[in-house]
Amino acid sequence: MKTMKAKYQNDPQYKQTVDIMEHLIRENQFTPSEIREMAVLACINYEMSRPNPPSFVLTPEVESSLKTLQKLREK
Image 1: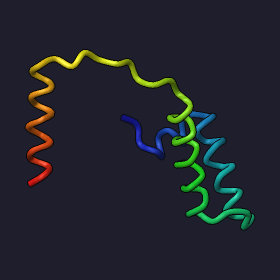
Image 2 (image 1 turned 60 degrees about the vertical axis):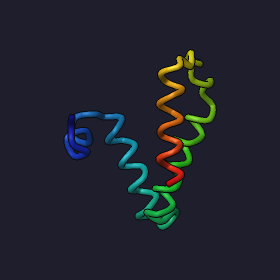
Image 3 (image 1 turned 180 degrees about the horizontal axis):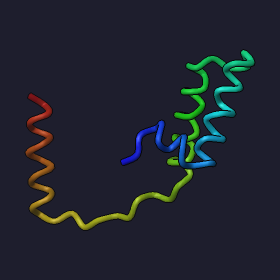
């Protein structure tokens, strides 16, 4: 897995996005915390807009395991 620095040095879109965000911070348009919040919100919005994950069949084994986990959480 590439480091952030390696991505910045080798991926033009990644570099451009980082540079834009840094410019916004330097120009006092947003704080670093606000930039982080915006990135998280963008991820949340993306995840919320995706279709629900496919449903699965609840086998007796899985149901038993889930009940066991629930009992452990209640302790």
